[in-house]
Length: 606
Image (cartoon, rainbow, N blue to C red; front, side, top):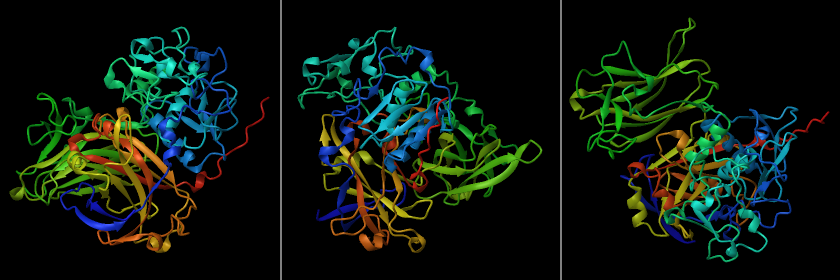
């Protein structure tokens, strides 16, 4: 594809020091244009399995949504068949984690139980509906290895039907049966309220269970389903994540009182500051502060005059070395792995610092044994930045923010913290925060690419991503942004395994909703294998062998693989993807070798 000008964004939060370098850069697609499963993965046209509504294998007469006999007991036993693509196995675990984060639904490896879900690779993406009580199959065929697709199919397994099947659907959408492929009209069935229930919730255009407008259409340019309110035509059929109503219905149906892996979160909008307390032996206090023009909060970004609070520690007064401590309530983890995510802003002296501590049981039952986890130092960036701090605590604890004054005489502000979440999940390996993205998008053309810094995986592999703000791909909603993953040479290459196969790269564009349960981030994954380039080299070999030198990172950047249709411009402009005009991308690169052989035999029934 010739030489392109790649804008290099330096550091996680950068645009200030961007510059252009010439790199020979070839984009390689996970799905070719004619075989992109995410166009409509639930249709399963040509599948031999007897399905209704595209992706449901439902024995006649079973009303799994209303009949409590078909509700699961948790945790749900599962088997991962070895017929599955390795990428699908990794994506299944991602979907499991989303269920645990947003509900009480849990999963466990099969151990001889009568009822279970067996994930297998058959002819498409489909599932049984409800607990069949004898063991059942959930198929993830070619192209179904996507977290949102698996979430959708698991909702079927949990007893949910498609959104446009509900009793009152004709009040909200029009079904154009004359535009449906002949013989496929049954895929638009509507059920009365004796068969399914909507859990007393409104019609949800944003549900992950809704059809797209062009489902089962016989004419590529004419939709089969349209919304009564025209603005929702581009929203129905999203493949991002659970909607807020999906989460509400799931929790109502299974009487969930709280999520399994969400320990704490706080936006500081209320005066009780989520049960956090001021330190008793420090020098000053954190102040519950209402945002003002030029010093807005992160939750509401100054959009509400009487709301938008954050916690602030003033470093302009007092003496150097004085500190203020803010402690969480006592928390009781289920796992020994947590991720503390928050946004912070440092506007004082370059010597100011924000220190994260944990307090654990000191052996007497008191939570007061301190351990320092991480220190953040002030820099020239005075905007909100995202932070991730891994914790490894297996018993009751508190997490603590300590603000330390560096040089009050040189301070023009202080330290602010907002939008905290603590989940029992793994922190992302890398976070790339791109400032002023609306301007980037407006000024970009199809040859504009943004190149991330080099990051490192937990194993030590160097990697990066390339963002094309304006992809060559478009559909009925408009344009897309493209995102591609590549390896990069690094300091550990001499001891690493090459080629770097059986590793899963997961790229996520973050929805910055302050409530982690309501985020609809866009995530996709690919898994490295023994594929070769056009000149016969191993695609995932050491980038020093296969790649192109980049003076910006003083490293070689390898072959690029990804998606020309990673996220819609339409989606970027709504929700919270561009809060403060920042686009945030998470990247992980994990070893899936332990998942190569996962299938276990089913115990014979008595």
